[in-house]
Amino acid sequence: TGSKNVGDQVNYEITGIDPGAGLMKATEKGMTDYGLKNEWTLKEGSSAAMTAELKKAYEKKEPIIVTGWTPHWMFSKYDLKYLKDPKGSYGKGESIHTLTRKGFKQDNPGAYKILDQFYWKPADMENVMVKVQDGAKPADAAADWVKSHKRQVAKWTKGAPKGNGKEVSLVYVAWESEIASTNVIAKVLEQEGYKVKLQQVEAGPMFAGVAGGSADAMVAAWLPTTHKDYYDKYKGKFEDLGPNLKGTKLGLTVPKYMDINSIEDLKK
Ligand code: PBE
Image (cartoon, rainbow, N blue to C red):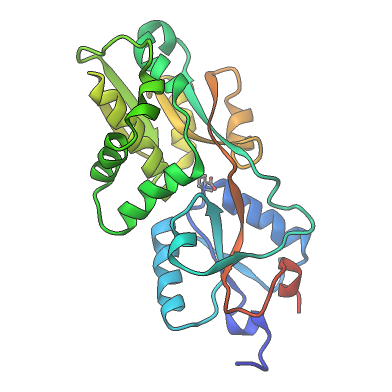
């Protein structure tokens, strides 16, 4: 395949994830910014389908271009690189925020306090993600992490009254990163005596649920760029508790064995 250009090698396809993801919007923008719109297609699917295709290609050393993000287990399992983005289509590094519905603080001050104090690092999240990828149930991987990070967790629960069975509903999308964070905070809330209901939804309904009050909270708002549309749409209808993690990244991702380095290399 040495003589073929990269587009021919991958059929002019970028392997994407769920259509509600901000990463998909960023990629559409990138395709416009780099003049790829006419030749290239962005394939919709899910993050599970994307990682399955990546695994298949990687094992055969075949070329593939996926929409990727950090924190993600794929960077510890495979040798991958982000394609350079000189036009800045994917924005800068950002933070993941916790949002609650309006009135949640009054209704459930203890759970609110724990959610407000929830803060961890990319390496923490990755640790949980890798365990899930290795076959652990998300709830078990979360329980493991919580058990081995008692001092960190004590900072999140500090000063919060016990739940005594009080209910908390959390919504999340089945992105590997959010499966990890949501299960960890759920485990901590449960440990403190709250009864947690987890609901997996699409990105739009996740924001709509918290804004409309049918869900109490989410720990999955990537800001200021990735979820800007959702954030602006519901602004004033939720409470933003600020970052629970800092230092994310998004972009087109390829195995290191591929001979390209920049999104600009796709225009050939
Ligand atoms: N992600 C993971 C999400 C946010 C979390 C980058 C795939 C998105 O693009 O919306």
